[in-house]
Length: 86
Image (cartoon, helix red, strand yellow):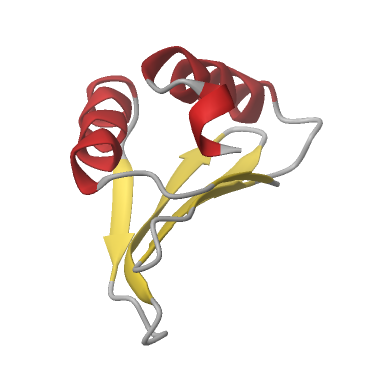
């Protein structure tokens, strides 16, 4: 799991739109009061879940052995500066 802290909404939207260009996103309602939005990306090797919280936390959860998980984390790292959000 990778957590980014205090990610502004516009940076989150940039990440979501970039992933939408490469993957099919399965969006579902947020069941937690602290969460703004969440979606899954289904790959052959498993599911990757993306969560965005009201406090600006962007969380990427998936199997470390899933190559798609690593591609998604690298893509997010390229879109937003890691040092600003860890």
